[in-house]
Image (tube, rainbow, N blue to C red; front, side, top):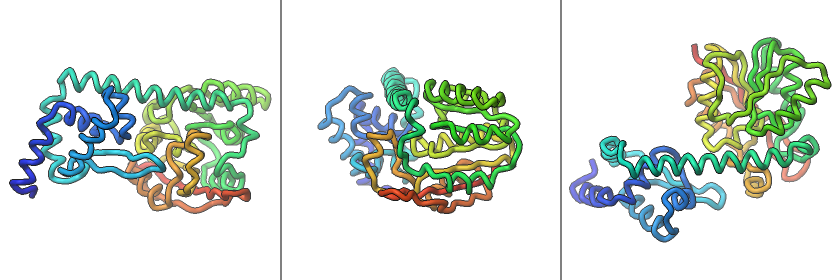
Length: 311
């Protein structure tokens, strides 16, 4: 129950075009104040004022991620009222324009990520990268079946892709960077591997058929995803029923410098958080363990998670 006073405040909050536009955008995905300023073409003070009011009436919640505050629709009774309002106005031209602006923002994020990986493609294998340990990789590979159709989502330097290709029936190598994929193809040719297919795509939007693979691997890729839930949902979609998922990623840490220098979106995950995200995507038999600790400071810890897609 919201109560009469609460209902009155809620309706007043909804009686504003700008606030409705903000709520409509947050209903699509979690966004920062800067994101909203860019999509809505509004100043910081105006956006902040509206966000604070929406938080006061329980429509919006926020959380800290490094130096950023991220906003989303708050769960609760007010959300049901909001959902009806947004559905009633779904075809409004303002909402349509904002969705177009949001897509521009998403493409800018992808372009930034693509530019980074294109830039470092030539020297990626020599860089010191958090969580890139052969011990962790070997432990993860031990959980995989020796033969089948693999999808390696976010290939990085391609070392894992090449290793999988030695025993796999086929490997679909997916990466947002054409330079990374070109480097992989060259190395595969040198090694005489002909069972690798490269696909330039975002791991959150795979141009792959449903139930087309036996094993999906996300090795140090999930922390690059703007929406890990979407990436895991795509992994589930392309897996055969009963297929295997392998995730190698970083244990939650506080090294904020990786956001700017290495294009990390998330500062790792706790074991419980990673397990929860995988289960929410429809996987079963989820096991998450700590695999290895980097010997060099700041000693990033690698998590290994395995799971099965429900039948």
